Length: 257
Image (cartoon, rainbow, N blue to C red; front, side, top):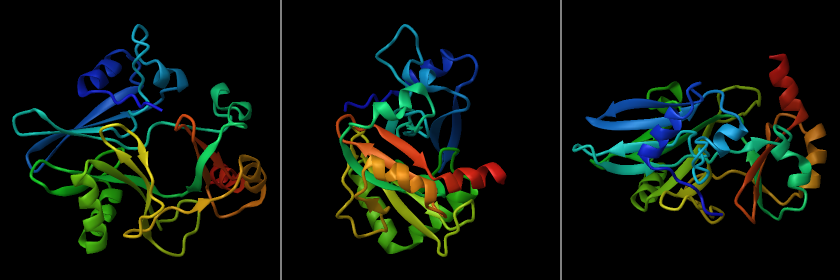
């Protein structure tokens, strides 16, 4: 799959083309450097796939925490990716089972019930955590503590120096799944230049997400009975699309909360 990675000006154009505020920009200053994060509020499948009606080559699938860091002179230092937008099974007609049943699967990993975050490097070489919302949340405070651990710091620094984006989930704080430990788990690693998802199987410097050798049919059966787990992420081989499948238990826990 060839990922569409929008430039900063294209992100602004996407916002301007969606007057209902489906997409937005948040601005920050850290260590005197300007930073920008793009997000969404109520955007639907069609808003993401065709955000600018007369420009079908542009999509907004990366506007889920996509950030830009600028140099002192206002020039771009780096574009920082998060996870490209993907949907849950049956969330839209484009995500029904028939669309995926015969697609070859690259991997299936656990859908952790925590807080998504990544790390970015500033022009002065310093590193800080970033969530979809920004840099000053409780999740950022927790994530930045892991930078004090040499194991985590060296891995994150090495990734960023190679312009690779490490994407983590911070688990331990009770949401719906009950974890008996706290950790920051590597979910994905992306090339910031191409958007390509990189293999993390052989990484042993930091904890990585559990991977399973299930089939899609297996997951559909497991979701009915598995408890204390949010679900699974299916990453498909042929076009790098992903799909969320959540357990019935997690869906009921959220509904009854």
